Length: 454
Image (cartoon, rainbow, N blue to C red; front, side):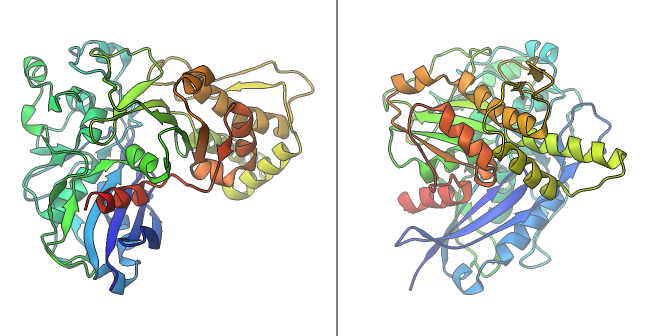
């Protein structure tokens, strides 16, 4: 009888769960549930927070919709999720299993996400220099904890996926892999240790630092039955959604992986003997993320991806509403794509960095080369899609990909999947052939990791 691995990704906008059959490594069932968890009425300028309870409710509903007979044969559970963010909770009181299969949260903060922008450049420059090859940016867990408005009533901190692992296993504290720890800042990936002395000297609450365990290792076992999954089922320590998405589709070390969903990332694998530089370069557009088995990925991680296109649609919808014309966002999106498909090229130039970039937070968006002949929606949509690609390829130039021996680009992500214009611009942007069909999927990737390491 088949056994399955349950892979879960707690993303920025949705939760996805998959059941991977261990023998064939094929997906036997999958479901995705939107979290609708964004908190929009915050009084804090540039704050980006999400309702923890809504995220966990979405998780419960998502897993509960998978086939019950297969859930009963789950042999292990793996989790990935949105990196950099931080959630606070109280040990032993972070969840309540009194509702049976559906655990509920209590005594937790809201999730402060990777998109949080409250830590200004001046504030970040006031922090001590980390002993790490990775710099610290706003939205990173340690920077958020340093922020003066930090909530001091909690005893444990972690990413949202770390919190779910703690709930499932009934852990008193939090365990964290180097993939998530590196995304917080002040973590040395060579020694796999927090910068304890540096943080202590700066007055950081050290008791909030999670215990680190290897990427791919176990965090514990389920402390209760959950949707038919028996108590005592092994649970992997949570991994980064980016690393898991790459794992799901990088079939050869010569693959470059482009993912455009909410944000955008372009990456390739570094040689096995690569060691990152000892000091961070805050102005560098390329970072080195810890992967598996002490290896690294070279990553251009842009804050501007599908979210830019969504903002454009929302802006047009708001303008139309002011003119007493209403269209749904999905209908408007389809019409924009149709207009752009009829406009094969455009001399309009759109720099879409409306959210800045971590290596250059003050670089905002621009529209240039405007003329009377290129103001149509077709021109603007085409130029915006090309601008998203121009931005990510400026962060990781074609020469860098060639030097690394990248032989093809594996392109995936929700924005690419639904936008033919964006796919056309992807194929224009690279010298290497572009392949689709191997969709980067963090939920599948984390299940594959556990399957491969069984």
